[in-house]
Length: 268
Image 1 (tube, rainbow, N blue to C red):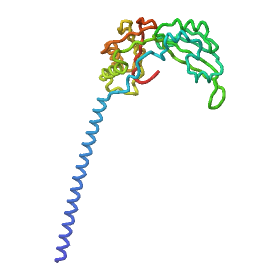
Image 2 (cartoon, rainbow, N blue to C red):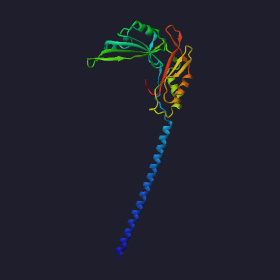
Image 3 (cartoon, rainbow, N blue to C red):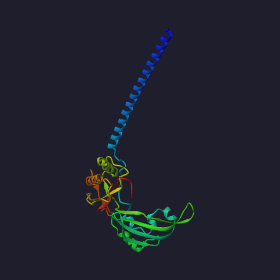
Image 4 (cartoon, rainbow, N blue to C red):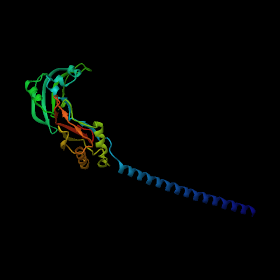
């Protein structure tokens, strides 16, 4: 009889401990689950806040002439295509097929094109480039046979230097290019909030610094795909915080010069 009573007591104690352990385990799991849910909600809120405050930073990457700058004083001394390229480059060229000078307007090639068939520029080509005014854009397309230094074989190739004619002393922002880029970047932050890099496109904003140091003819050649950003950039160029120093020719006379702000994503 005593043995039976002892057995029943042990059984009851074992069941009680098991029930208590199960209860605590359930509470602990619930507590952990609650913590996990809370953490998940917090992380989502933080991510949401970051997305709302995200500002695309790699925005303005250049201010200057449209293409590679070449001074008008140098244009007047040029005689051949070699004058537009490096010595190392010219030494690889064995013979020329054609050399064409093509004017560019509004970021597009025009029908004004004069072609020669040697390294030396023709009289008509020289006359054309020497007649070009400041801020004129043009390209030279040269097709030739060159020596591949790695293989030692001859191969067809071509070059298309894109150039913009600039005055001897170019127009400049009184605070310097870095200060201008900083001004444009900082004051466009609100417009750039939540911009998606994949949707942002390269854009160029053209403007003229007049001989009096004023800003005129501000126009956008293409949209960045964000009209609010386009409008803000136009507004900022029209209202820069510091003055502009006008360009000067070789005689020291002040002249107009067109400049370009490249913004958005890096492109051509």
